[in-house]
Image 1: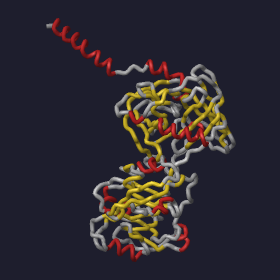
Image 2: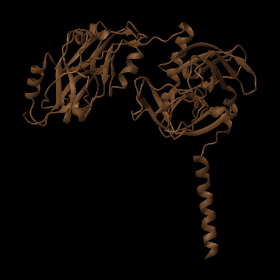
Image 3: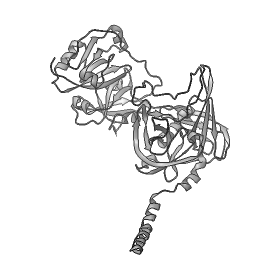
Image 4: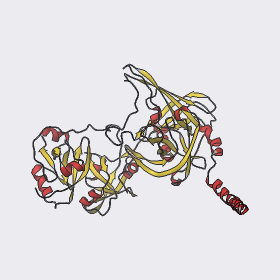
Length: 469
């Protein structure tokens, strides 16, 4: 009996071991061939009048109460010192050589505002690098060192990546040069908060402070991405890492190399995701498309006829499945190009011709309606007040009603004090009486879509209507 068991075990190992060996990848050859093209990047920055401790910048407008407050931390370890006087901080990151004459790709946040950038090769040589250009929106930077005959990476096609495929990162986490970590592709085309122009590659490769700007390789030894961000509540690796696809990065570096800056297409609209409730209020059968929540005056979108409440379904022949698709497609369009935009407006399909503009660098000043008021809540739970002339002026002459308090359904939907309601189900609001008539015409239990101006942004908020007053 024992002999039979031993024989069966031996047979099992004969058949199973080759399978296991085949499924577990061997990264040794990849690392030997590509490791020399990965560099360590250290920077020195003078901080003027800094307080105690150095904190990485959070996305603009994000409060500490926001659930995403600790969502995406940049990878340089914190440094700095107190005292309120000028002091120097040092940061670490990674990069990789893309040409034998010394061009290196890394993250923009690794070299932004640096007074000095030092590139260290695997053979211990060090070079001062010149920043050719950096694009904060894509988080890509191109730097140059004066050297020749350098090892360089081979570039792959990130579009050929498959979810579940093995990938490998090489970088300098916590300054530990040429550290190799591996994992799989967890998702593709991932949209992240505050990052509208990059379809991120999500992986479970161990990425930590100092890995920023390092390459992500496929099993062929080709670079398919730049490791850029992590999801972390502690500042360290938690199993969720994000890389910029290399084709996006190369497009940026080509523009930086030729002109020192990146030119992106621009429409001049504010958009939001279409929820099930918004789709119901607009009479839509699904939630496909990007909802236009606001149109800037005299912008390309305004000149092309786009209006708040339009749902963009196709842009220049490309389908827009979700709102996060639109910024990437528009941004990749050459400014000045005339494109066809397919929209849904009040249950009717239309095609508009829009000439794409160039994205401006500066944002317009926020509109902040203010002022106390006395009012009574309506069927939505809103207490409203008419706008004064100064508030209308800040809204570029738009009509609307000011929210002084929100209760019940309105509060639960996210309406807050200081919001200005511009429209109800795409009908512009002129005053409080007209607003209440529009709401009173809606059956109890149905949902209305309120177009709300909040600061410099506009957005649609679905609110369920209560019974009669």
